[in-house]
Image (tube, rainbow, N blue to C red; front, side, top):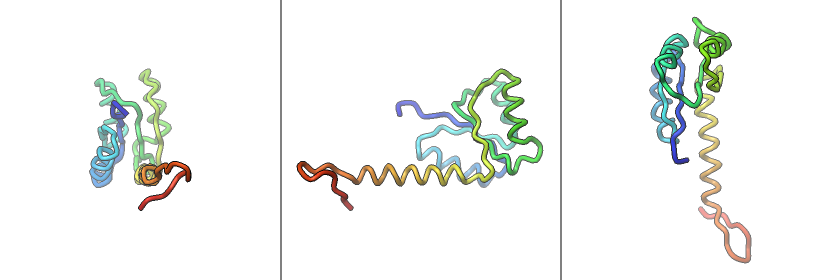
Length: 119
């Protein structure tokens, strides 16, 4: 990937935002963070460019994920939104992806015998 994907992560837990910040950076994303749906919408209205929004609706009492998407669309933005009910689902998915890629990297082709596992 030549250009890092840009994410806007919306989560009201400072601990979760801090954990995700370092992790997403290590796996190749440029992440910005908002602590509420209102803050995220303001950032987008102020010109923040993002490839997707990750919205933890389980801990967003002031604005549901559906309401966030509706307001985003009413602002004329068609940014994809991933609604999550558990903040660490993203970490779990990324961990699985990284393990799969690491396993593929350890598989080498040996002439005449197909693939061989190293390690």
